[in-house]
Length: 312
Image (cartoon, rainbow, N blue to C red):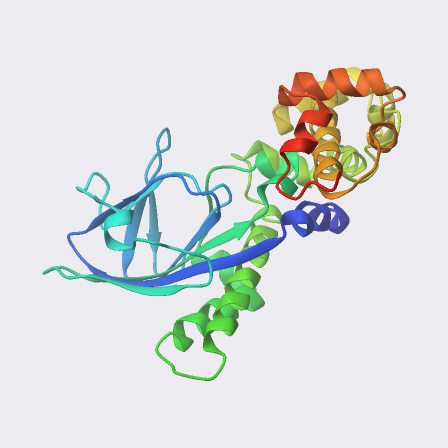
């Protein structure tokens, strides 16, 4: 997979903070979490558990396995599928970025130890391709064994938890951020991603080249024909392959990237609308306004006025 594309996918996420916790839970147990506005990771340090997401088959995690939820999707964790659960909010309330907590659930059965992190990032900076990632990515123990930096960081986090060393909180925050990026790198580079189309898109030499062009050169006057040429494929083959792997047509993916950048420029700069239109690939302000309103349901001016840190 093209390393530049991977960097472009991950670099804009702008991680802002991490809430992390260590669970020591004894069967029978079950915890249900609602969708959260952050990425989530669960690393099973000892024992085993089941992960259940709406519309997915249960996933069994064993000691040494890691699960990543790029979009903070709602899910249930339990010792067995179908187990009765309690709301996460009732056992771990007020999960603010930067805090660390320990969760203990007593019971007569086997113990499971899980390290969890909620990684808060700027959702507006997430690329359209990042948003197309699956609800959950699972790296088993064998895969982690081939990622010494990732596995070593996870082992270090587990060993540090009960230590009272200077700077421990900051070390844990940075370590969880590193785990997040390394886990995504490992998942996106995993050759066993046959069941996850968008991951195959990232690994596809031709489609990957087009995705990199859309991500980094969105201001150019692309058409399906020129993107197909960039990919080295015929127009029809490229359009069909792109839609199958990415889940949407090439021009819609390009529009998503352009609109994302336009929204960022409106929020973070004082550039006039005509300059923004040119930067994101529109030859006229009218065309840009129409596209922006169709995409976001408001005008560029309305979006700028509602920005939290408006500059004009």
